[in-house]
Length: 638
Image (cartoon, rainbow, N blue to C red; front, top):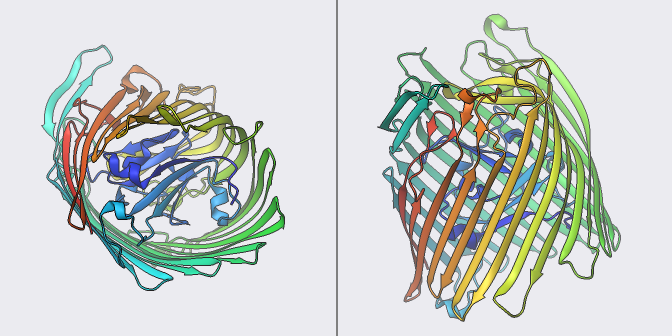
């Protein structure tokens, strides 16, 4: 309700045209986002917003946040786009007051919305209108990748419908790469071509939804299951190409949402969720100690959000969230932590003439307990924390209409150390303090539609921002991808610029063109201690310059899309020295799509070439990415 600051969006139609299969692939086209990709179809993929780290970014699936209390990392490669209607990115937070209390605590937010069934189809499509929709997709590509998915939507009654989405993925994960390393004096240390090993994946995904409409309301129930077994190829270090690490994940959750308007002045939303995550990690590398551990997470989440319309242009909300997280593991001397979180938010919004404004304050109360067993029984610990985090968003429309607007916000937030940060047997630090952030942002937006001429729509967003992060916690791979080395950088200052522009063109009767580009500049420096050798150096893995561009052409039933992604130079360690320098990289992707009708079925054939110019590059040091690779996709809608 009454969003103050506009968001970045990719809708279902654009997601289908791009060469994207997972949520992680799609997020590469948003400004301010840095993607950590460990390579290949099965490589873990996480995102970072405006240099503040993955943990400050809230990711919601149909309105309820995804959680991982163990390490705070959400592997976005697990979430397919086959049933996604829209992906939305907000900086600061979603600037609408009708939302769960947890959503007020994020430094940025990604919302993934699944497709809701629609059964009224136009006669132009040639597809008859009935109570059932079916969609099947098959994809084959490089690295022996085979991806199958299906979607069944059923109209149960005039007010209730269902959807069942399932997918299967298998790939060997093998691809050629070039491994080149040079000494600081410029001499070649290693330069060879090899095949990436132990990057295979087998995964199954099942998602079931029930949608219901009420008088002035709606409800939704979702059940989700993801099961995978993958190899972890590890870092290429000291000319070692093969690793013995394996990981199995069984992630499942059930969630429900209920929305109701009572009269014209009050709205309420109730959310509930239970999640269970089982991770089995094995390392049989003969050069390291053998590891065979299981981690079991549970989460219970309850939320209520309520909005009262005080005046026609003034509303207020009160939200409350409860979270219970527990982690078990079969590790010697494990602490068996439990965390209880209570969050209460109070917010108000004004929408009057040329002004939109929103203010909020979030109170967070967290209690952690550990429960040791065996010879360490009785050495339990208990800690508690409370925080207040305010935010203020303002958007001004100085002219008639909404084609130009100026916005600004200031927001305070924090993130708790994860269970691994605090209690992990090898490197947990129970004395870690929460990581806090303060964000300032100012920008403007232009948005114009045209009735005549070639240009039919043009839009531009420009933002400058300044963030400070205190007690910053940074995680690096520790040889093995699943384990981490924890570093506390202390204090970081982040300055940046985000620019996004897009336009639609009507060229003749049947030719339509779209263009979208984004650019990000980030200066993120460690300012903890002037005595440090890396004082005022750029923090690891943050490029000063990055961006992307998408150009699409549609002619009758044909569609051609070209996308370009660029990441500038950066460093893989705290010291910005030549030895730690990482070269810029860029990739070009090309897709050609053709759709046609066969009786009552719509068929789509799509061919993709990714990394068209066969660039050798690494997103994470010593994790080489695939070179030129191909995909062929066939979709059938009935």
